[in-house]
Amino acid sequence: QVQLVESGGGLVQPGGSLRLSCVASANIFSSNAMAWYRQAPGNQRTLVATITRGGATKYADFVKGRFTISRDNAKNTVYLEMNTLKPEDTAVYYCNVYREIFSVDAYWGQGTQVTVSS
Image (cartoon, rainbow, N blue to C red):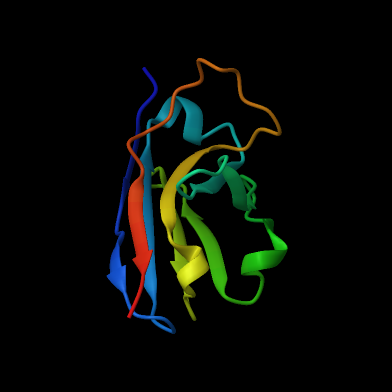
C-alpha cells in the first residue's frame, strides 16, 4: 500500500523559513528517488527538488540556494528546508517518488499548504 503524508506547512512572512516533512510507505521510499513538488492555484504541479537514494540532489532554478532537500532512510522520511521564502513560493507542497511524468491516476498525498504573506 502506498502512503505519503506531508506536514510542516503554514503561514510565514516573506524572508521566513519552514521545514516540511513527508513520511512515505517503505515500499516506495526504499527503492526510489524522492521529490518535492508544488502546485499554486490555477497552475500545474511543478517539480521543486529531487534526491536519490544515495543523497544526490537537484533543484529547480527558482529555489536554488534557498531550499534544501534531504532524506532519512531509516525513517522513510524526506524533508524540505525552505529559507528566504517569497510570496511566489505560496502553494500546496507534495512529496512523491521522482518521475518526469505521472499517470493521471497516480497516487498523491494530501499535501501541505505553504502561504508566504505579510
